[in-house]
View 1 (cartoon, one colour):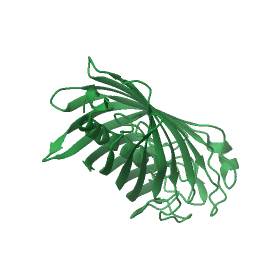
View 2 (cartoon, one colour):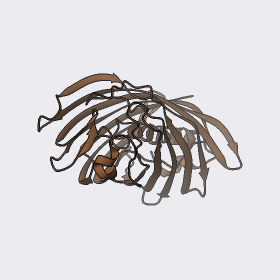
View 3 (cartoon, rainbow, N blue to C red):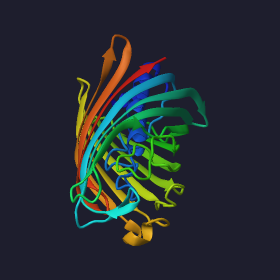
Length: 326
């Protein structure tokens, strides 16, 4: 993946852009549909520093099918001094281990309208969850279940210049995953979630360096099983990446999640709205090339949450692999 792949009138370079876009789009929908890590249930959709991968602001002009397989491993803990509404009660001292895997399909439309390019994505996730209360308030729980389906009807990208790119989207998460209000380990959240998102990418071709950001706000509907309504979450991710001629890239990624207001309904009043935030930082490694004639890309990252309030605090690892087909 090099900066030259985004010169709009080169077909070969556009193919590379599609491969890069696969990583960006897949990671965004993957991380944003993680298990409920807002306030109710202890864990919400966004995982710190996981909503962004390279070329997040780029939608290529090509007509392609992009297939991505990706997995996030997350391990975190809610300290005994913090309280959250979980499984119909207020509890403290929770440990979470989550393995979230998804198959994602992105279709780039292959049309340009007024300088805009477009794409659509849909994903099917499966999740293993292990949750335990280390103070013994609730029984341990674990399970492997389908999580909430997600789709992005339209991703619209605009090439501001040859080195500046922006993408707008609305990610939608449907309450289709397994959910039981009395369980600790739920793969679904039992709410619709709407996430308007803006992504921006700045390229420095001479140095083969990229700076990207992704910003979105998660808006939740009320959980009709508990009458709990999660407040909106502001999610900002930043990435700096240096690429090399052999296809490898190394960089750093960071994230900041901030709850915008207090939760309401259900048990929210007993936790004073459970307003929370988290901040994390870590390294990222990427690779892009071809297997036969098929463009492929891969990414690996680790993010450590070094600051968290009213949210679990822990570590997340993401591994993704994408392939682009005409």
